[in-house]
Length: 307
Image 1 (cartoon, rainbow, N blue to C red):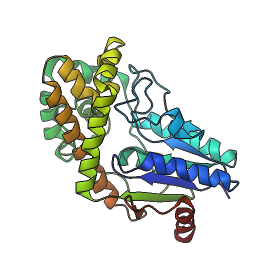
Image 2: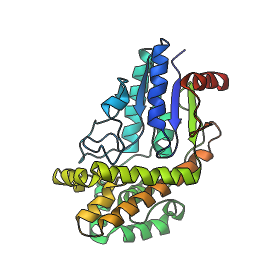
Image 3: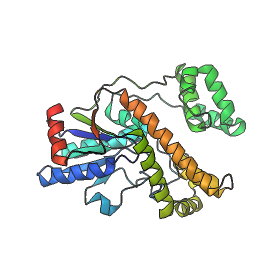
Image 4: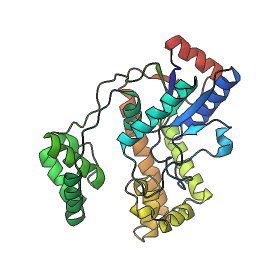
């Protein structure tokens, strides 16, 4: 039997990363090595530390972490690429008798890694033509086109997210349609135990606000300014990360610093709510109280009992 896959999920600031390390340390003390596989799309970028709440080396407690600091900020990380890299890391752990603990991120990335999840193909010529139109016409015009061609896809997207709109238009051009919904809840990998951290919404919002304040205190603005000099604005994916996008707007004179901080908090709260909405539809997840967490030993016993 391969080692089980422990998947820890939950909203921002719920304590996933800390719990993952505690579980890995506990399993190692019991003679079962464990390693952590990151499922947060922004932790892959070198230099994006404060705004992503990337765990420090000290916080990792010597536990190997996969898919952290593997890309430069100008490189693009697609969901399909992340799926391949994460599955390779999980397979490597299992081949070595190591328990992989998958931690993060968005519902889309976790589902892509764990579930039967295929991606439509791509065509460089079609993509290049659409991207040229995006530059010429702007994201709103492209979004209006998507609304006409695939309204069910458009309602799931932000009108100003030109990258996602272009990808959706490419899929429509290649396949004639676009499915905006995620596939059925069916694991592609055996032995998955998914644990969700449940937290009161008001507490979650307060934790998010406190985390954003802490990021500012630790020097997020200086971090973004330094990354901007290294080409952050040219990074299709990295430049859109929560916090980084808002600070770039401040540095470009489009808003005040206080507005950038408020926008970061508000955007993070909206993101957390959307992710909880997706996860709540998944009956396979076992939920635990983030404010009254069991000990690692108790959680492992609960996982054994459930799965």
